[in-house]
Length: 67
Image (cartoon, rainbow, N blue to C red; front, side):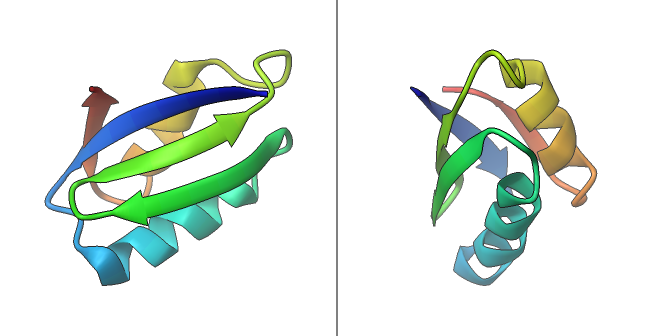
């Protein structure tokens, strides 16, 4: 597993739950821990790239990028 921290502009704690659920729905993501303005993601890089994770966050309506 790989751990990454992704910044999510405009995400509060409530929205963080929704973003975490979207990430956890992806195969290979074992943890998604939201915080104010960022989310910590533990994932298997053989399933997804960081850009895949960022795209999943953007589909939830947020701008996201590496911290």
